[in-house]
Amino acid sequence: MNALDLLFLLSGATLLCALLFGRTRWAAPLLLLGYAAQFVALLQTNALFGEPISLSWSLVVLDQPMHWRYDALSWFFALITLGAGFLSTGYGSGVWMRDYERAGHSAGVLHTALAANVFSMVLLVGAEDFLSLFLGWELLNWATFFLMALRGGIAARAALRYLGYAFTGGMAILGAMALLYAQAGSLEFQPIRESLPQMSDGQLWVLLALLGSGFGIKMGLLPFHLWQAPAYAETPGPGSAFFSAVSARMGLYAMLVFFVGMVGLARLVQMEIPYTFLNGRDLLAWIAVFTIIFPTYTALQQQDARYLLAWHGIGQGGYMVLGVLVGTAEGSAGGLLHIFNHAITQVALLMAVFAVLYRTGTTDLNRLGGLVARMPLTFLTLLFGIISLAGLPPMAGFVSKLLVYRALLFEGMPLLFVGAIIGTLGTILSVYKLIHNIFLGQLRLEHESVQEAPLSMLIPMLSLSLLIFLAGYFPGPTLSWVAAVQAQLGLPVVNYHLGGVYDAHGGFNMIWIVSVLLAGFGIGALVFFGLGGPSKRVHQLDNYAGGHFLYAENRYQYSDHFYAGLMHLIGPWYRGSFQWLERALGSIVDFLAHFTNGFYGIAQPLLWSLAAVLGIAVWVF
Image (cartoon, rainbow, N blue to C red; front, side, top):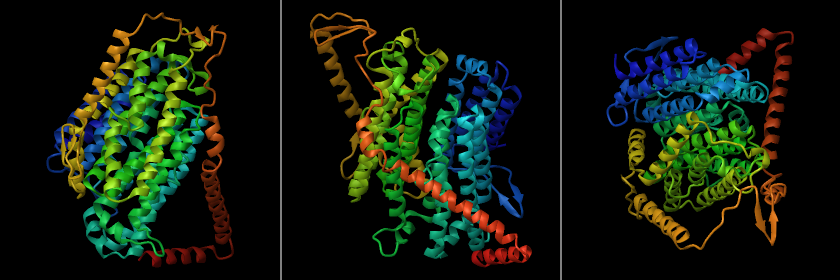
């Protein structure tokens, strides 16, 4: 038994433990031990810097072999998956889980759903053929639905909506597999890779449409993004954090395997769109930019903190795709690095928001405020997270976004650069709204007795905050992982060092940048606390302004419907358009379904069925 065999065995055993012992009081320690053991087995595979490692056994289904193998790309995504599973399980143990059970929910079902998602992802990222990939993909779709639907009500309706999208994406992937099999005579990656250069641009455009839509639905790329925010936001706390960290990135994993690792960016550039100045890569890049902009400004409209972050999770995926599509060492490094940086950032942010929900009973941004004095450590977690999400120093998100920005400028893509910057502006505006409406301003009377989050929730939150800071201060270790992935995908490899990158255009060193920034804050603190005049502490519920004393009953600071004026100007013209498009597509599908039902219900249904099958066979072969 090799290390990969052990990893798969441990992942299955963890799922089995969740099924058998999920309701018991020792469920969380057992599952944490299971995820930790999987992490150790992953390290033992040495798939990141060593040779790829294959599973010692395989399956044969319909004369098609199914293989699993871990390489640098698989290792990178498995690391994020196991880390998110471990931290989410730890966060959801203790008092959070006890209250969850008191509310009538099952701890065992939640643990099982989370473990099923981890197992499906461990399986998916090791696929070495399209049949194995499709198996992992469908298992993940059902595990995702299972976790989404746990709470019932709004969550169940959002999960059913996701299932409709997932079925559509699965059928698109299945259609692409039929086309690839007709061309290569196999569903294994290597024969398909060898057959792709002989395929025409027309066939590749069909594959781009089928696989791009199938993988893009999971990723939440426009125009397939409307399902994701409500589904992720309504999932119970640990599940929501896990989904936002890694679940949608499985779509990006599959895109990297096929479009970058097999087709290649050079071939995408050659696939020109007639009567335009665009090619296949440009088309995907602009989809990525619009995915950055529209969901980000939709997030700005949200009055619920969970929905605000869920919409940002969609938008941040656009930076990942955009960076990879630039194709340079820095661009692809920025896109790949942002997968990791955004995972740790988004998990920390959602954990902070769900901690506020646990203590106050609400995530409505119009019913919160002033919690910084009651939940200072949760505030610190949210502060670190929003700085990283906005792409500002000294946090991790700054490094990956800076690499993407630099690559766009150096490669002469100014319009795409402007689009990415517009998205960043919207991010800054919305994360300020998030921290302002929850933690700053005047404390509400009903929250005067609120306490800090429990220790079981604080430990993963503060651990992630430290990781966000360290990944921004010393990006070299994570860049070494990214460089290994670049080499495995055949991309130019970034020239990195402990503090940043070397580059002919001029690199950067985060150690110097962050050190100077911290020195400035230190000097400011010395001036403020050492040289400032005498001060008097005022209770947070009371204040003084304009010559008048303001007491708790006077609502001096308002944060109701933050940015209402801005939303009045820009709100109606973009969110509604995508909702209209979704309804239109649904109406078309409904019409086709009724038409097909009548078509096959006439006097000769078998004859028409045979004609349809023959027509599809002719088109495929």
